[in-house]
Amino acid sequence: MSTGREIRLIEEDDGGWSAIDEAVGVASQGETRAEALANLDEAVELTLEARAEDDDAPTPDAPWFDG
Image (cartoon, rainbow, N blue to C red; front, side, top):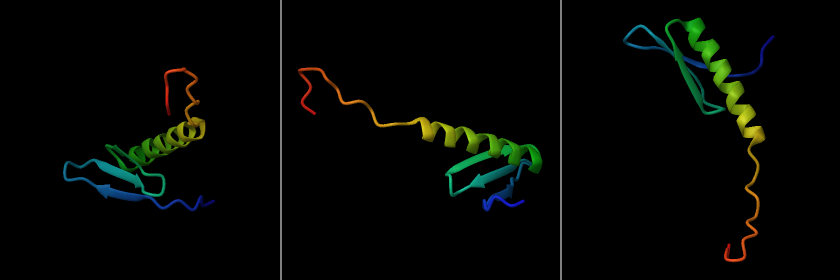
């Protein structure tokens, strides 16, 4: 089952791996490919949750605020 995500995996010079989801704008790393991908999945999930919860700031009601 494909999710349609495009992930870049990069083997680093030190032997670790970086995983990047450019569509979401998130990257992660790990000592193995599997660890980098698992870390990326977690980072993407947390990022999407935070973005969904992020709403506009309330309008200030302080009388001295001219905004």
